[in-house]
View: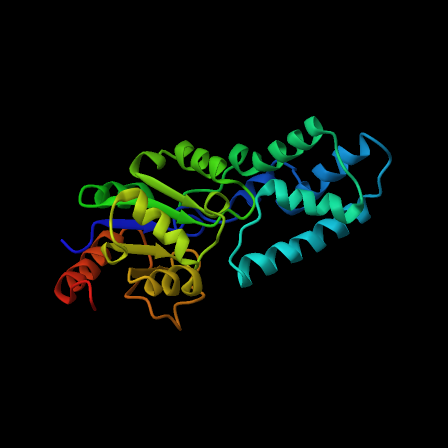
Length: 259
């Protein structure tokens, strides 16, 4: 068999990104965006009176920097680095214990109220795990890889995966080759023995294609890139994914690693 590993993006592929916002709203909680800013303000305000609007502006500026480095340079700041940039922008510091608490409170938000799994994902993973090793190759935007593992575990999905490549741990973000190569090394396979599944053409199709892997564009909750993709296949549901993977794997077998 030419294909030995199926790798998965996490957001909008395994879990429905921002589906937790509806849960937060029904509980009367702030949005994730507002709560993250509130946590920084709260930590600083406990030390000395602090203007919330200044904190929000500094956070917005740090977010803009993060997005530039993440999307253009494919470098992932850790959560500690990201919050450090916010504090630097304010000319403020926190005691070590207060900063650690801020990092942990921010990291735990999506763990405590997790996004919902995409319909049918458990059955899809169970079926694929019978024939392939599975791994996750995903950017960690705010919640670090440790928390993303907890989210998957809480949904009963972590047990299907043999390896994880999260961008905050790798140090680079998709589509950088190191993300996919990290997963390949962890599972002892060559890139051409991987099919990657994800929702973004730039990250989840062009990234794996650049190192010789195959790619399936997954469109169940985010079909934005379906009209212009070079993916080896497009799949709209987890119910159909095992069959789509089988077809791509069969073609890969016929083509061989040099194709």
